[in-house]
Amino acid sequence: MTPNPPIALVTGASSGIGKATAERLASAGYKVYGTSRRGAQPGQYPFEMLALDVTSDDSVAAAVAELLRREGRIDVLVNNAGFGVAPAGAEESTIEQAKSIFDTNFFGIVRMTRAVVPAMRRQGSGRIINIGSVLGLLPMPYGALYSATKHAVEGYSESMDHELRTRGIRVSVVEPAFTKTAFDANVVEPDAMIDEYRRNRTALTAFVQVSIAKGDDPAVVAEVVLKAARAAKPRLRYAAGNLAGRLSLLRRFAPAALVDAGIRKDFQLDTH
Image 1 (cartoon, rainbow, N blue to C red):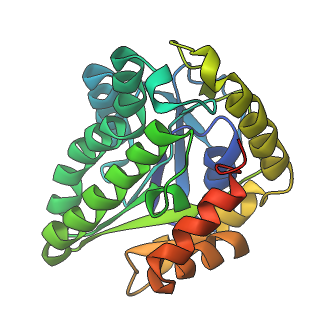
Image 2 (image 1 turned 180 degrees about the vertical axis):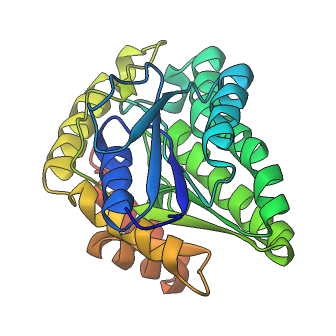
């Protein structure tokens, strides 16, 4: 640990991208505080862990206050906590389920950002790095709610970056594609299943599982987070991995009709 290391806070750090990110930042000389809803035993991770539920205003406020009590500052916030709904038609999730996924994936970021920005403003510096997805740029049929949360993260992050830039704070979005994480660990089943979509659900679940198995290691995403945290002139968006880079370029430069046709072909939407 270097003298007076920068302080980083990483949400959802008990596994997957969050854990890999916390470990990479720690190895690069940051003093890292990870979070999970249940916290962790001392020594369980190579970084400090705090109990934090991003869906609770009180929990967020308490965890950030405790970190500031210990360290007096926060230099980097990585908003990673989130979950998805297993492949399903958009109408197969109730409004309650839709609110639940937004409460974690989007409003969790809003809560965390609102909690740390006052300290960063007082410092006159800070980095907020939101883990988005290529699905914040592209649609995912049978993943409409998850994609919608990631689109929301894109708009929120870009707007915030303009607001905070003159105060020494920068906001970036890291956009992975498929990443090797525990597929079943952070997804919930749709709560209003309709039999008409059963065939699509089955096919898309198999497609997603295979794609995740072939996806990037979480360390790839973690390395991009470190790059964004260290950059003298950080970009708004960072694609994480080769596939994410290709899809990002495709979205920005390919004709809309070509992108549309490619999505329908990949998801076999014109074969039934």
